[in-house]
Image (cartoon, rainbow, N blue to C red):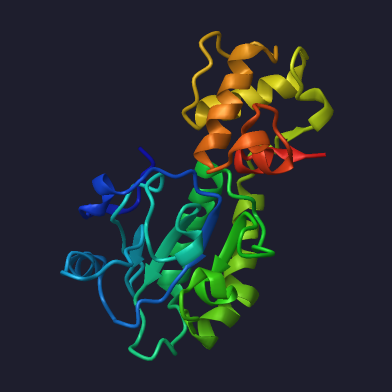
Length: 254
């Protein structure tokens, strides 16, 4: 289960009804309502509401989690199968900035998502690119286009929030795991294969022999299983990782 320990657990029915995902993006929203996490949970439970998110952040920085982040939430249109979504209290026009308390909480959620799911510490460069963004960045993230989270918060994301996220990572760094693709081939034995195996096991894939550093049948099957869970088929799920497979596992290709 992928739950942020600082959040109040406020599960909604979709948490057990939706498909499982491997998130590679985190998308920030505004709720266009000055609601607490509990009131937002009640909204998700109202009949006819079909755009639930994983988290809700109140004006005071309080955070609720409604769904495991390995479960699909439907607030992001074409990104539903790969994105964690974070709603935040706002005025009804989505025109106010995030409060200082909201910014503190959002930074902490972003750091957690980076470390838990290996989401790259960068702004998304396209609607499918792994990283962090706001709902308004790409039209494919919204069926009809959106101004969420509003001009003030979009500017805060660029000028304040994302730089603070990067500073938080620098202040409490985690090891950077880099691999070379030519080392990740069937029959190879090396440290890059061991790093790949650790990443696969962390994501719930099964390698009965454990971390051996040897790329054999078990590792290839685990890679293929992970690739299929991304929705890839054919040569995209052949058990040999390319750059995107590595990125989704939290590995940096050099």
